[in-house]
Image 1 (cartoon, rainbow, N blue to C red):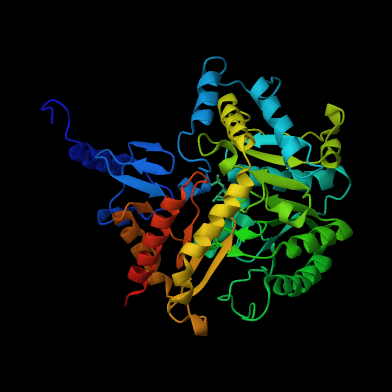
Image 2 (spheres, rainbow, N blue to C red; image 1 turned 180 degrees about the horizontal axis):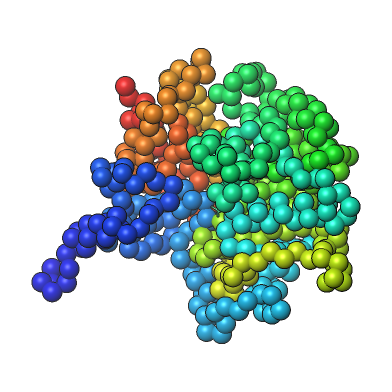
Length: 463
Ligand code: PMP
């Protein structure tokens, strides 16, 4: 080694100490890092992250589900670089620019028919806030100010800002702040997991169970229709709630009920959008158009923060009036429609245009399924479930009695540590281990991923 260059191992540990001294890491009990090492990352390419001392780590969770085409995809990088040469940022109130217009045109063409207006923000939670505010404001503008409430599903997650947190139902994130939050109306989730108490029976199909489950939801919607502004759902897949899944028929039935009862439908496709479930959008499985669709994460291929709330002409027109009527939607964020982020999104859509990615996602998803066959008979695996390129493995103390491991045992953390040792980034959600890799992963890398996942399940369930 050149005596003047820093030793990479020292540089890495120095970075970790400096980080612990000044950075408050997200979703983390910082005290854990007294014994659980932070992982420094120096660079990334494709599905691989690399530490300063050259260790490679396969990003099996697409860096919190954002990085759909792998890190530093050349087409996306090129779009951002080119944009940097001309326009970095300009406020979007009173001004416009090519990237935001082109992106909006493309999103209108790509999303379910009828979504024709794009309102930008810069993270998923904010996109949800926009949808909630816009929905209530629509009813206010159209003479129904009493519509002030929102319905959500049990076990749902829609983000961390107070409005988005309020319409979520994941106690781990929500309970502490409950005194600060709006109270939503909660509908029973159609979650088809066999671990759900009183849930789907072993012989019952996802579709039958989802249909059966809808009748309870419908009753609640009918009872509250007068005051309900909107129902918000994560279509097909409740991600942060433990990768719980359900059948598209439930979404279809919900769309019909919302139309009948005069309630908006908000589809939070922040995690499912851009192909993750094997269709471009999860709503496409049900062939429906929501009144609001929230998109973020994969929209820039995990390159830059960007989010959008899309809606239809009917909603747009309810705000379109003389200024003095006070009907305008006066919501804004400083970085709304940032040109660099829009360029990254245009790069991402250009990659989608290169080939039939949905066929690739379905093929790779199938491979993930076959390569995890052994897990389906593991004594501590309650269930392996899948939607597109999301495969989840539910650990249980006793699968037959639907008895989960106590959360305090942190079984998932054991799996995380084992996988990291083997060069794979898994970040379980409690007792749920899952794979959600970038779409550019190779079959051989999937093989490696499934091997490490299988070992990690053994390690996590050892007494
Ligand atoms: N909705 C869903 C379905 C999500 O998965 C997330 C993020 N995990 C959010 C909203 C919030 O997005 P963000 O973290 O960008 O605020």
